[in-house]
Image 1 (cartoon, rainbow, N blue to C red):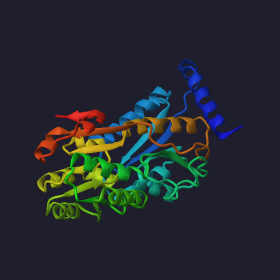
Image 2 (cartoon, rainbow, N blue to C red):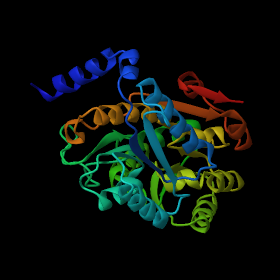
Image 3 (spheres, helix red, strand yellow):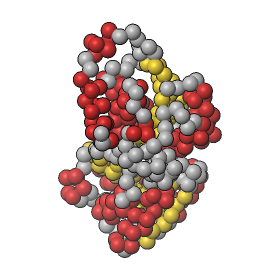
Image 4 (cartoon, rainbow, N blue to C red):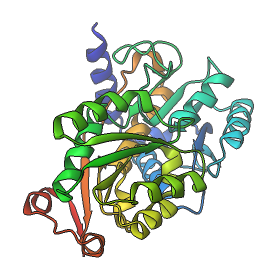
Length: 329
């Protein structure tokens, strides 16, 4: 039987099981570990956890009834990520959901046997998580959040909304972002658009401030904020610094634009979280993670903030407004 046929058949079989039949079986408490890079008080990752939990419940797994979800928050601290990864492995968890590249790397270091389902990982092959996208092998599979070509797309959108752009910096933390995946697309896009590319690696809030102030030191500067959990955790100072320095910016997560950033184009993180639940369901029912292919986003969203555009002195073109999934006024 072909791999795709196996996966399709498994999904159909699971969907066909009536909830009533499941309820008649003796309940056995299953244990799922979930490790989030962000802070438990941050609405962005809390939304992802909620989407995952509701999707699990729709598949017949209710927290406290037949499954226990051990949720851990690292608060943006990479050292705490490593501690919590070991903690979830030692419980032990039957399957661990790892949200982001650094979290997946930390859990992988702790176990090569417990199934791991990652969500929002940049490049799972280059990161060494899977042998191949179609046949991951090993104990890890999941849902990647971006494709490398999007770095050029972000730059195109930034130039479209800020036509006076002459140079653009791409910002990321080398410790948490899949920078090597996106840089070629960014640099190629910059050359074709006749924009000077600038690399802006940062490790702290002070680094963020310094980079954005330098970018706004003269007209024509723009900012591309790479998909990166460090950037997500520190989105408030990024948005604030960009506003103070009058720097137009495009972001790889819709929450940035909703929180006051200019423009975002990104996969729907809530949808990815829901889809991650389907793989956890398959694994709890006997599937091997190495047989479940890595999947990519199927839903993207563009969010534009008109209030921020006005503050920057930018007129949002109809081409952006017509494509936007959400317009904040």
